[in-house]
Image 1 (tube, rainbow, N blue to C red):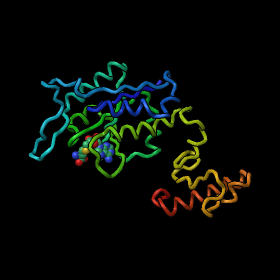
Image 2 (cartoon, rainbow, N blue to C red):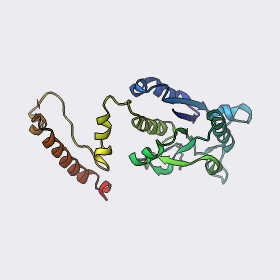
Image 3 (cartoon, rainbow, N blue to C red):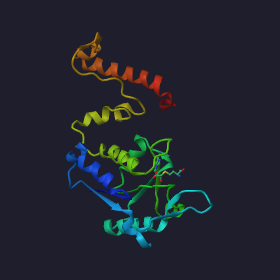
Length: 229
Ligand code: SAH
């Protein structure tokens, strides 16, 4: 049984995703439990305040450490174990398939979504196991990065994809480690003068595999040479 606890000021965004994503319907409820937690429920301040001006004179609000620490303590009591705690942050390690597969080994995960100028550093020191970034750009909140990370993680659960092979055969999958997958085609065999490569219609599975390997290498070289280093 895996559990995902998500701390956010906007639980509706995450709940909406889980209510509507097709992958969710394939997940066995005994296998995965997802809970969102409203950060405001953990504040000790008046008026449910969770943020304050940042020290040092720069503009912008910062999420206070105490409600964040309280939320992780609550989840720890509830799960009877400290969750492996992930803070979404543009200053974190950039996620990729191999980082995700390490994270997938933990049974209890907590995701913390930042907002405004980010979170008080002392929360990170006290509770966060890893900071993860979804890329070198800045969003307004950690909700979309959390959804993105969770969607990628759910694909590791056997049975969430209709076909296990599609996981292994995707870009960065076990059959294409560090490589892009290459092009795919469906009906019709001819479209506006563009033909599906003959090899794919040949039925020769060995040759098709060789072709895929070659075209994947070529595409990776031309588009993402950095992956081959
Ligand atoms: N002032 C911070 C950015 C805050 S953005 C800085 O300069 O580093 C507000 C929140 O959005 C962050 O706390 C984080 O949770 C989320 N966020 C923004 N960009 C992100 C990214 N690339 N990856 C992961 N989380 C991100």
